[in-house]
Length: 465
Image 1 (cartoon, rainbow, N blue to C red):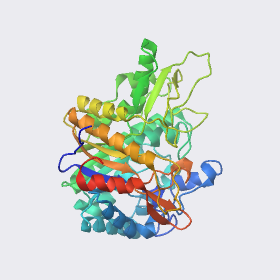
Image 2: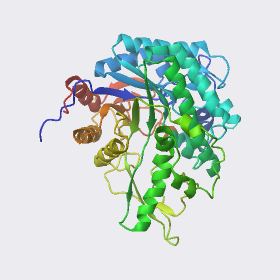
Image 3: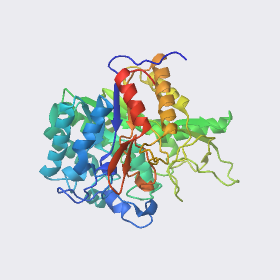
Image 4: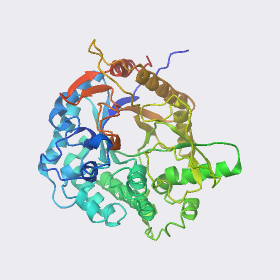
């Protein structure tokens, strides 16, 4: 095999999210979020785990940034906790919270690492959920106000501002299947949430353009690679239907300024979409500098025959309620291995396929892989190391798949490993480890896994080890 070399200027990074690593849930003036409420509700998370302490990054941030510097990365993608900046989701800022992120950004710049800040990675202030949450239109205005506060404070020190991480999860897992906070199971509310997330993205994007004109503007989507179980017309239509809900419900408004007509028709039995007002879709379509792409696995669907036991192996957590609003006639099939600890199939070719689709449909829009990684049951060996050969193989194959897409013309500017640290993996608590750095949750000891050493070789040579 010939050497895989990435071009000069290609950005290598790692990614984290505030609720998953920070801890200090009641310190520094931080208010409660929907994930505080959800994780403290019995039966919602594995083993009753919460993000109260997590990886204690709030107290250990300086040491964690030194780990980043040692890794040789050029960028760090982190999220800002809205309830740390505005405890109730509106009103004056909490200066202690702003100062925390200001110190973080300043230190990154001192280390020569680009700060890539996500405004929203799922930790909605509980007060705003009590007022209706994302299904309520007022949320979009509240989000724009929050963006005004934090972008105004951190200004142009942040290299890239990302409005949302995976709004698909916020809408459908939070309000349809209920496997994520706030745990509601209301299909029409989920579609209203889709729209208000799109609208909030457009409003906040315009704030960023105004207040930080030198910064890059981005959004991160977990776009699904959906494949049919057969070549039948019925299975092809199942792919079309899920593609509308998973991908085009966000790509349409954000990039094309309109919802796809088939999405509206497919879901007409759930909602009349009257929450979409004149001009909303144009507002959502704020011009982007880069599109963030999160990729982990593929999705296999077919038309359900209505008789046999329906398979719901969509990889997004078990629930009696479907995340796939208005698509009761579609079933999600298990896929052959190998699988990660999340039960997700390992399919690097799907990443190439996704990047080339985006390049084909949006040829002028640069792409950034903002999350890619794998959970495996890692342990510290008697020699004091963490030998995670399967993760190294996963990363090598997916980064090679990224290179394949670039060789075929896709404009991919960078790659961020998920994740820097083992952390609170949402409803799976601390049972699933995604980090390239191992965290002992009893002592908060950090230990580089073999994958971290491997990644450092890549970041410092631009050549796939």
